Image (cartoon, rainbow, N blue to C red; front, side):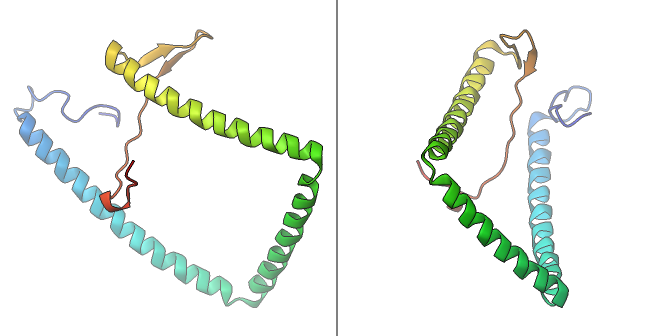
Length: 149
């Protein structure tokens, strides 16, 4: 079974009911959440240890300071270049295009969800003749950290 196959695809051969499958799936989700949280804590601890080692190394610290200074010079140079009216026009156009792209991608996601719901198909053929598969990515967000719309 690959990751795209639903867990409850065929309960007739296994003799498990839909409720049992749902409970097993719920337990699987909960155990993965616990495992992910544990890995995050361990990762944070190890990342802090690595940062401490790097920050206590004189050579690394000196190179880091040089890199910060170079980044400041680069930012100042970029700022100066962006003050040029022709460059500023292109910069604004890039910002507008990024916003437009993000809006169109959000709209496309909504359209695809509705298309899949109405057609029952998880594929669509584009104007270029290429067949594309509709894929969704799910993730969990704690309720307290979700923004209310």
